[in-house]
Image 1: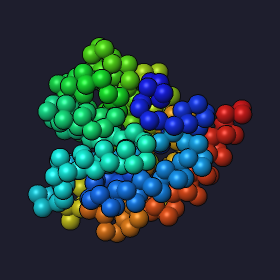
Image 2: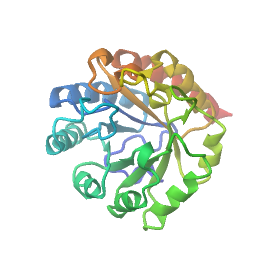
Image 3: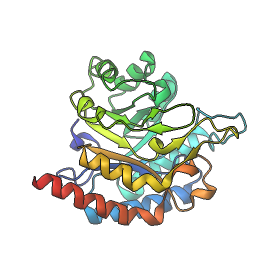
Image 4: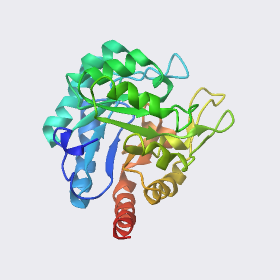
Length: 272
């Protein structure tokens, strides 16, 4: 994957890791712009190639009364406004073949959720839009099996594909990252580590996913040390009121210090 082929990407030649970051879901225009402004300021300072992340809808929910979105068109237009306002590319999840073509009108990168990455028609539909495709590795899949998901994209005449590691199920209510999979998957495509989703504690009796945000820096440091190309981190100015995945989200106030530390580690590795 060539970062320079993603529209509006800056600092692609910096040698730094790239970052996919933003809120779990688009909750409104003001919150999206507020979060984007902070991240853009920090990533420009540190020369980190940056893509704003926000789900235009949440289709995978534990309970029927969970937040799913503010309306597809409304959320997609907010993603477009973020891109135009801050001159950064954007990424969002898709869940159906129809979503692929629709979302491609507004964003630069299409993300296939982990639970759906084996759905051939969905992956092919995303690939055929010509947009960069981010394949999230299923919690139930081996690193080696992601080769076939990547091939579905490249066989659709799209070389712009990356894999995101987001942890493996460890029992019923916990996740664990097997860092041995990162060099394996790097043989197939650039690899991103989804730091925050890797710290989820799913399947809670309440129907609301828990998490371990206190471990975010630990997992992120390990990812940089093992050679990931990019990091994925969801962030919010107040995770306690976030409408989705607040339990494992990074507080926006902590982002700058974390990225500074991670950039130092990356620079040391680059000098080895």
